[in-house]
Length: 228
Image (cartoon, rainbow, N blue to C red; front, top):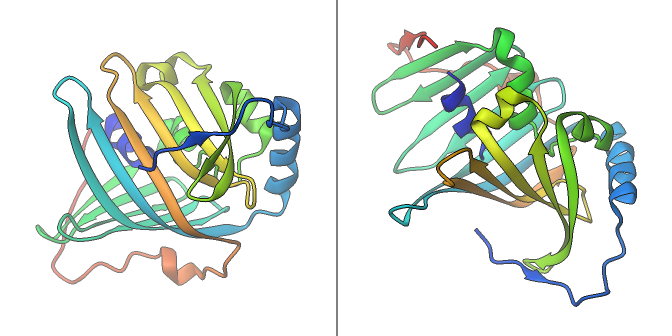
């Protein structure tokens, strides 16, 4: 189950240019303190997203687009667009993947994997600096400009052995206007393959009802519970 969840977590392709040397003004300590402050007022977000999987050995890229909805009470919904339509829904310990082409819903009980899943799945979405440093060795790479937005770039190295079996490191670009991710890059352990997830049109703290995180599957769907 973990490879599947990791793929969901690696939800990111814009070239970023570095700011001129000497113009950085955020230190790691300041950044972590700012994230602590912003986490206290975070409730929800919506954004358009573009996720690209890069297979390094064969230089293959595949991209899918969609929209993400997140609420701080462990609720998330991702709607991927055609041609590979699918819906990913997470509510607490439950996670669902709906494939409309075959009218099938895969159901997962996160159970004992929940802490590990949360470490990836909610990365940067209202995460405090304190919690970030509990799970990762955090390095401040610097400041950049991305799509006319000022961003702070961090490198995260997972501390737990289980996490490092899945991911060797993560780069995250935080928009200084919202302190939410503008982009994430997640490197798989061993292969060097990575996901690049770009977020645009992000809205912080929009009203999101419970109904948006309920199971609205069409009649006649097949429900399966993959093992692993």
